[in-house]
Image (cartoon, rainbow, N blue to C red; front, side):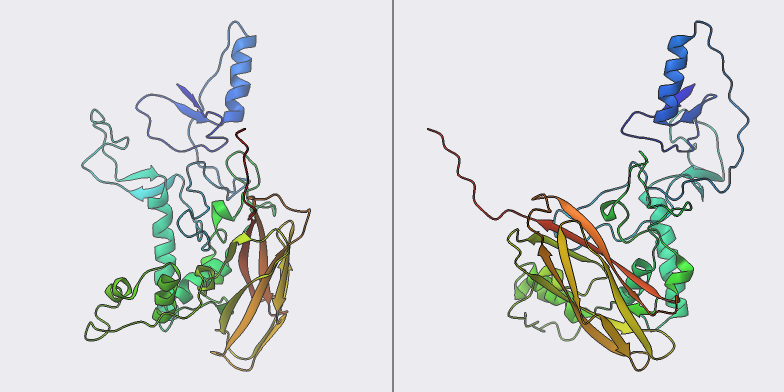
Length: 351
């Protein structure tokens, strides 16, 4: 059997444990094969012996089944955060079922090729565990920041990562990028967050004090009250990415604040480089962060303004902010996401 992808599945192939002699081909190859079958009365073909192909190109690229952004609940927080290996991963397998999971499949294997978030998630969990071992004083937020800000967004051909249809992927597909564990161990700067930050984030989402108190159980006698700041927005959470989904089309400024901590070996100076989203001006202040010692924190602001005539209302556009120490050792990269919305009410005549 020849299993060809449909157009939606694109050019991604997965190692499935077929129950009969079979091969899996891409949509592009399927179109070529179908054209050959239609043009030839006596078509012939064969399936080669399986082998492992190393250094495949391009890689990595986003799987067709991978969940996509934007975050429909809280669009001010970019989702997904990160991407990791999750297609045709050789994994330990149960002896209670066959590799296909079908009732009549009586084959039993010690390992099987598995795909999905259930494969990419263990990669990231393992990386987080290793980072905690190397940096036992890091918080979960600091570990997440290190993973996100050191991720790659280019494939092994030095081109922007693509999706399964070989079209350019976006942060709504890969988040901050593809994990790079070794770089995450030495990120230079981290965007940290503590319990107060997250409780204030709940305030920004509209939760009241009684609901927020349930998240504080175990912190003391159970009667703690978190005082919500007078003015706080979801995008003010100290996250390693910045998303502004409600930017004014008239050029009004939208400013968010971030703080970073120097986790390098000593003093350092970082300069900002901004790749602006299409149709949006981005201003970072200050443009230089000077740290006298390890552990020191600095704060900066990122201001977004729509460029009149250069955007499509309702369309998400993407950029990035990179803090570099100038020595090539540390490049702290954060995705920038913006959407310009038309705030004018539409009047529809029914006369």
